[in-house]
Image 1 (cartoon, rainbow, N blue to C red):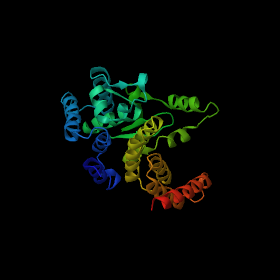
Image 2: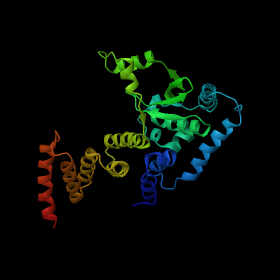
Image 3: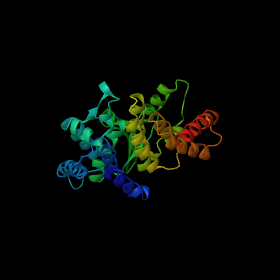
Image 4: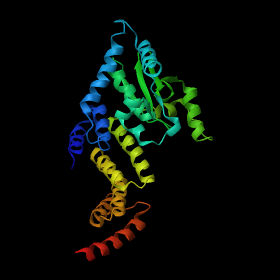
Length: 279
C-alpha cells in the first residue's frame, strides 16, 4: 500500500462528519500524482476563502455571501465547467481543478462547498438526477445552487425541468423533488468522485488505475458488493487470477441473488481451474 493510500484509509475511517472532504479528494488525486503536496492545496483553499472573507461585512446576510462567493469564484477567479472535455480525468482531481479552474459538477461543487463553509455558509452536496448540485440553508429556507452553471440558483420549476429532461414522461411533485434534494454525505461524494474515475479508466482500459480506484471505493464503503465484482474483473484483466477469484467469491457471498450471479459463477469455475494449474 502506498503512503497516500494508507493516509486516505485513515482519513475516511472515522465518522462521516469527521471526514475532511478536501483532504480525501486530494488524496484521490495523489493516486495519479504521487508527489502531490496535499497540505499546499489545503492551504490554497484556506487562502482563497480568507481573501473572500476579508471583503465581507460583519453583518452580511447568507444570501449576500452566496452572491459574493459566486462573483469571486466564477467571475473573478474564472472557475468553470469543462464542457469541452468533460471526461478528462483531470476534471476529477481536485489539485487540477484548483490549478486549471476547470471541473465537472462534482469537483466544482467540492470547491464551492469547501470555500463556502470556510466563510460560514452551511453548504451540503446534493446527488440530484443529471448532475451534482449544492444546497445551502438560509433563514427563510434552503436554496439550491449549481456550481457548474456559475452558482445559479434553481427554482422548483428549474429542478422539475431537469428531471423531465432525463425522463420526458415524469411529472414530479414538490415533495418528490424535495426528496431528490437530500444531502449527500462525504462518503457519497467520495464514492461518486471515484466512480467517475473508475468509469474513465475502464473505458480507457487502464486496468491498474481502475484497480487502484476500486481499492479506494471499497475503503470508503466496504459494503458495496458490486465494487468487489468490478475489482475482481480488473484483477482478471491484469491476470491476477487468485485475487480475481477472491473478489468474485466475495461478491456472490454478499449478493447471492444478483442478476449476473450465474455468469459470475461460471467465471469463477474457470478461474478455479486456472488457479489450480498455477499451484
